[in-house]
Every structure is written in structure tokens, then in C-alpha cells.
Amino acid sequence: MNPIRLIAALALAAVLTGCATNSTRQGPTLQEVRDTACPIVIGVVMGLQVEPSIDQVTRDRLGKALPGIETACSYAGDFEDLKALSQVAFTPLMAYIGESNMTPEQKQAAIIALTTAKLVILSYHPPVVEK
Image (cartoon, rainbow, N blue to C red):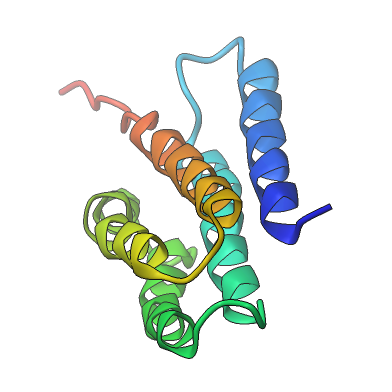
């Protein structure tokens, strides 16, 4: 199986598992969001970096994006970091994928995986603190 398709399938499975185990609460916790979305994004970026059929320019761009992704995904990060990741970092990642020499199937799988991660992040709503 193509590694990109495997990542996309795992991303979907993680989301569906998170939905099934989270039925008694109003929404996922920040940790659950981070633990679901971040491995998807990091896995896609790292997987594409080592794919020999992808052009070097794209692999270099993805490599430069990885430290920012890892920072946003660190446990020291907060929801604003994850939100920035989904709102700011995903746009260039999608552009890098779109401009690359990847096959249409590779592009589709990577975009599905990244979109899944973005939806997981956007599903989080910080708890409202009543005064």
C-alpha cells in the first residue's frame, strides 16, 4: 500500500476512534486534539520528506515547515498554537503539495490527511470558564 494512502487511512481511523470514545463529553480535550491531529500532520510531512519520487524543492520546503509544526504540537503549546497551525501553516503545506511533482493520488492522500487534521483541530472548543 502507498505510504501516503496508509497515512490517510490511519488519520481517518484516528478521527473515527476519537469520535466513538468521546460520546459522553461535549467535545475533545486539548490533549486529545493534539494527540490526534499532530501525528497526522507530522507523519504526512515526514513521510513526504523521505519519498524519493518527490522533488527536492518540495522536500526542502516541507523540512523547513516541520520545526514550526513540532512547536505547535508540543505539550508546551496551547490551543492558539494549534489553531495557528491549522489556519496559517496548512495553507503553504497545501500549496507545496499542489506545486510538487507528486502523483495525483499522492496529492489527494496528503491533502485528505491534512484536511482531517485541520478538522480535528477546529473541532476543539476551549471550555467556558464561568465567573
